[in-house]
Length: 397
Image (cartoon, rainbow, N blue to C red):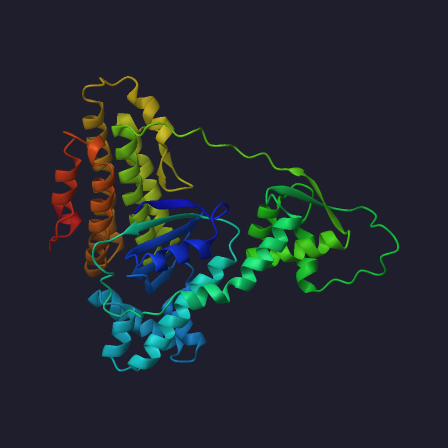
């Protein structure tokens, strides 16, 4: 089941409803900038959720629920780093949390992640279907319908917002002299905060990004300020429109496969070690690409992926008969190097867990592009390279 798109054009509740009614098993990834949230399903039931936001991680949730304290979280994470076991299992095995409370915490975490997703103004989503269920040793299962009903308020509020702000790229500016007759306008702290960010150059999206409020809260405040006549729309910020899609070639397929794998590596490192480690990955990838003629100058530091257009330009000078094969070799060299670096950034158990996550992702991507990758050898190379092993990738160099 291929399902991908943008939340600006498809409502998240509709996506969740589809996965639930179709009883799908797999992972729904929603990304916006450097943020990523994942929802895992087993036969239409939500069984697990994860987020790159520290506030939405299980340890933070359990502390807020007063199930454990911060010291217990630190100890459990240290145990997790040594053993590679899931965070929740570490708590159970050391007797720090009853199973019932862990399940309650996981449910609270999942609801929090989804609720916050309903407050996003946009984001790219993709569902990867798996033949087998999510392999997490601790999971919860509850019907997504209740969460969808709870989201009705957020959906209604977004519909109201879109009635006043149909384009979130509209630029807002303060009205120099508000019309008289409307009485004294009083602002609360949130309204003053949003008003201070409106300067005639920022779009609604820009204001939301600079605010310490959620997207829906920022837009709601902006609507109230519009209704009060304090601010007004001042044109629409120019956006670059993507070129119309073309037929996927072997080169396109290879770029998509390795970009997805590289993004998964960066996500895992960011979640376990932090942004500084991701910066090291970016620096390595940029230098590595500059040493490979087909990838020279193609690394996008801000996005952490390869620039498809620049790669295709580099390929123009290559013999069409060997083009895909040479590109596959260059992309694998970059991917192999990044995994070698993760051996220095992650503990062995954590790196082993990363490899386990990459295996089904690689299989799905290869299956998707199977007809475009004939005689390139990428399937054989990746299958062998990502095979289960006790040897660190640093030892393979």
